Amino acid sequence: MDFWDVIWFIVVSFAFIAYLMVMFSILADVFRDQDLSGGLKAVWVVCLIFVPFLTALVYLIARGRGMAERQAEMVSRNRAAQDAYIRSVASSTPSAPDQIAQAKALLDDGTISEPEYAALKAKALA
Image (cartoon, rainbow, N blue to C red; front, top):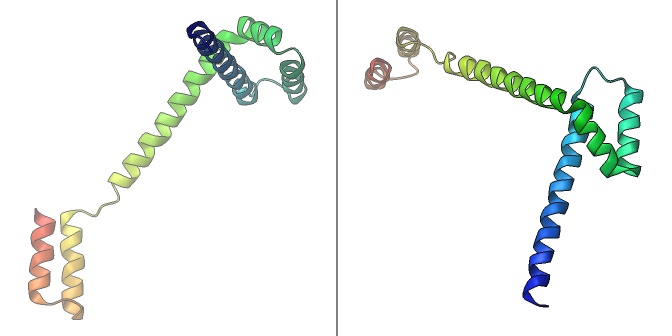
């Protein structure tokens, strides 16, 4: 195997991987699009299986702008959900007065000792 065979193998491998990435992104977009009926989704999938290159080219020309919009919408939806989750987790920690009140209740019940109460109170105030 000489140098040019290796270079040719790398180029062909790159093209094949790029082709697979396009196919998977088209399939993901077909199933992500809620405006397409089940029948049209099936037609796109069958065409991608039997005439893949031509179908991918037609899909990218006909629905390429919608692909980008659906992807951006999905990213913003995921970001909003992540931000809401972070806010809910961040706000779930009790405030300092609540922590001191819980520690005082534990002290009154005899669950913790006076030095443990003082340590919890100092930690809450820190």
